[in-house]
Length: 358
Image (cartoon, rainbow, N blue to C red; front, side):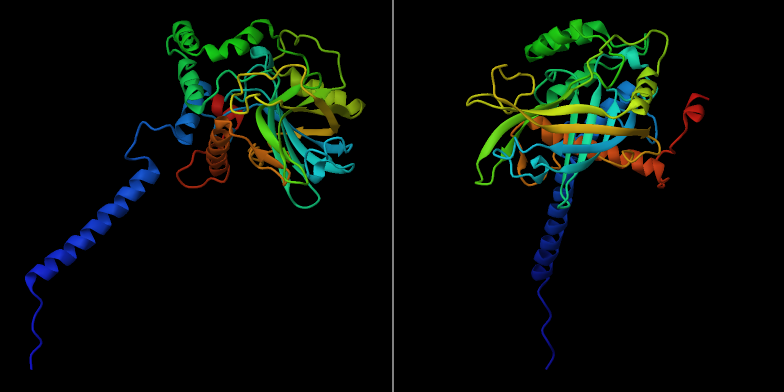
């Protein structure tokens, strides 16, 4: 007996269901890729804005492009162990690989062009965990949100006619962002220092220390140098910071103290533009010792992404929105420069300074 054929209406609804599934799948890809919201702030747009300001220098970081690798160790003294169970704070030595740098995307920027210096560290704990942190030699961050940071980058973009930022755009930006007041007050008097070794470096974002009982303590930290011979940078030498560091380390290790400040109830943990009052409890958690330096092109810091959200047990991120944005943007920058260095098809070639200036 012949099998009755399906009615045409059944086939129609089957094809409709398949088509709907395809459309939903495409919409899902579009949503994840940002195709449906082209103006949404993404890590790629932040890194693109950094490139627009500093230029494209294949193989280099898109921010803090000019730097030098360093290595040494951190020796805890136990003072922070009541607040964090991270083993790095016990009285033992933890190897570190760090990087001193200038802000901005130009790897050939003169050392005296900005008063800010940066210091990134990776602590390699004995239990296999890591603590990565990026710090800057300023007391507060200019803005509180990723969107405001992106707008600041746009306002700072060089005018094609002058090669410098348009003062009117910068004035309009800061006029619309009064939270930048403390940073602007600091920058008016800040001078480019002659040495990485004489600077204090602060992790401007808040974090949480978690103790052995699981209680969380809001903290900020900075490293404070033992070397105090601070002086303005020399005129006429555009690369004095690396040579100064090399000279100092040839004479012996350099030391900083890791100072951890505990927040009081009500201190903001989600706003890096606001400093906590000076009377907050601060702990000397141990000594950072830097013993050697290496060029960033071949040194151990070259392939490290100093993502500040890579943390060991005992330290957690806070609700500061800048932390997630930094993590995502650092990852995008890392992918771009390592793709260039690896000569992956479609990526730019990592050019030497001579090749780029031809």
